[in-house]
Length: 348
Ligand code: SAH
Ligand code: SF4
Image (cartoon, rainbow, N blue to C red; front, side, top):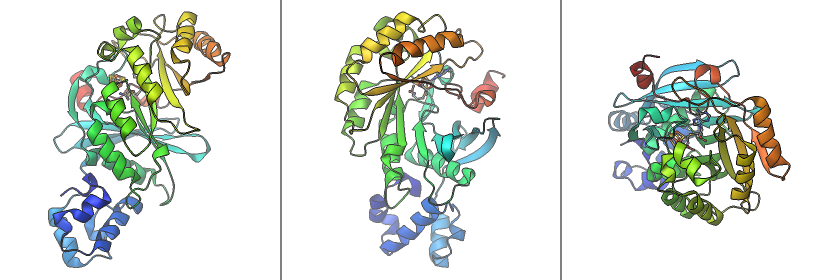
């Protein structure tokens, strides 16, 4: 019985808790999700007998920290070990005005094969379970030492393609937003996708309305196919069509991410094509200068070119932000996450 795999309602209906009073589950949930206590022994308002039963038959976390490294900009990367010995990474990112963002993984490796992304070099290994996703959040919250009531943001921008593991990430989102569990506002959660249309449909229908980010990274079909092979089965025009139907509240926008690759997708023509392509959508766009890694075959554009790209969009009233990489010195920046095992394999 892994408690962090279930919503509150599911816990209430679970045979494990059949003979327990309902408020017992609430107490356990408070220890785990509010107080960040992961040791049944320390749940002092539960009877000794019940604590023993829990210790013997129930689990809370399904990952453990093996390593963490902090960047000079305050970003901290965590390497977590899964029960089967695989590793995933999560990143704690301090933002402006005391805000804090947790960047979490949805899979070990990734099947999408984007040419500019280090995670892609691992290939797909496996999906993370809801509990493995929730555990990342619980541990990050605990290591960040946040006050009980302090809110934080979650972005699914670590390893993996969340909409290639839709069922489990949606379950994790249900648990994280459950009023009786983590009670996080859905607006604080962003799912970032390479644009899998089937997954987008499921996300659109899902009752919990989280924010959406789409990794665009190219200005036309041919160009995108070259760096994001999934574009062949999920064509750009179909993707845009789907995004036009995506439910957004009044204030809400879709975030596009656009990794700028020198002399590949960073020209003025590209910027103009992006503008035309996205015209009609409510959106903002994050321009991310490529984070280079050995063997990628791509380079980061010069700053002048990045600014030029941005200006073309801002001149047309598009909210285009250049996203400064955080944690670059510790390989925690976008696209830099690859498992420790993988790093050992490639001898880095
Ligand atoms: N699979 C999801 C979420 C993880 S990737 C997705 O693709 O959206 C998170 C972001 O990092 C994506 O926007 C991706 O385009 C970007 N990214 C990947 N590799 C990068 C690199 N080397 N430099 C800069 N950004 C990168
Ligand atoms: Fe997977 Fe996202 Fe990397 Fe593409 S950019 S390989 S979808 S993690």
